[in-house]
Length: 200
Image (cartoon, rainbow, N blue to C red; front, side, top):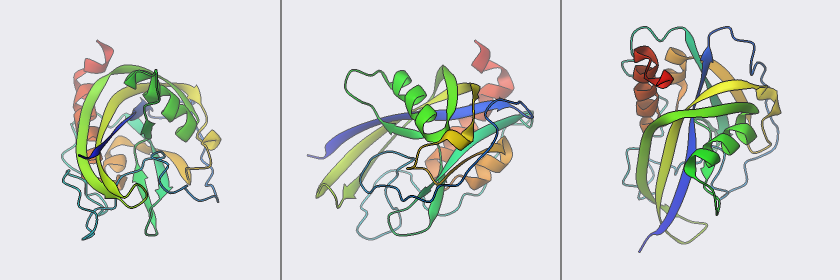
């Protein structure tokens, strides 16, 4: 039976041109292998990956982003990949004992982007399986993704497991995201923003 890993993170947004969370400083230190944090996804497209989810390692092509969301920016993180290169991803990490997924999302976003946020609502739940060389076992992973409003902070304050944290216009964020299922989650968030559902 595959080991179960539960992670949580989110899509952090702000109005274009807002002062909160400005700045970005690349980090020199490497991402520790097998940490389960800093936007970690399995390395898809490899014969030994064995994942069954909708993860894609190819650089993203933007999906159909909801009209009327051009006034928003989204915070993404750039992380090292196990086989070299980097990936742009949503901030997320393992749910620790005693935490609710919403609490994890706020904590992980603070650690990986330097931003203070509040959870507005759940956007998506991603499940997939992959083989972990570190654990020598199959991993069944579920990631809870929330829509989070940025309240303040500075992306220069991201932790050392993240190479860079940066704000992007929401349409560009859809192009930058490396993993297909995260692009799809962003599209769902864009619909919520366009329809004002995030305010309910």
